[in-house]
Image 1 (cartoon, rainbow, N blue to C red):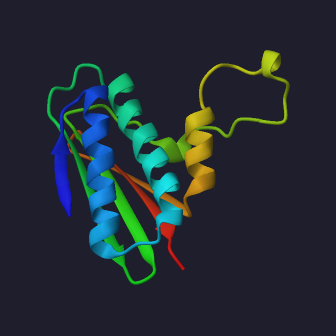
Image 2: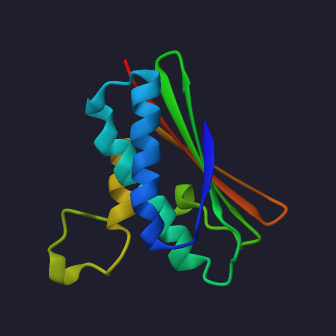
Length: 133
């Protein structure tokens, strides 16, 4: 199941409804909904933030395979932004000693089981995989 969404934070309500619809259709345990919704929100808003010049809609694809859920976000005509290469932040350091940023991606990495990234022909695709069983 896949849909495109406008490049706007205002699209997040429709994104969440899309995820909820998929969970209902595939009868996925609602205990996984927060992890997926948070991850998609973080990745979607990062695409908005870091790919300012892009104009095409963002494609979100959801797929359930046996006991895993794959969520793929694709942004078109953009520079690469590979979150798998983002340096881990040290959450044990006091807040006043940390640089701003990176906490959302840190949380995504903790909430899902695997993250994959592909960049081909100015198309940036981030896939998160969550084990359901």
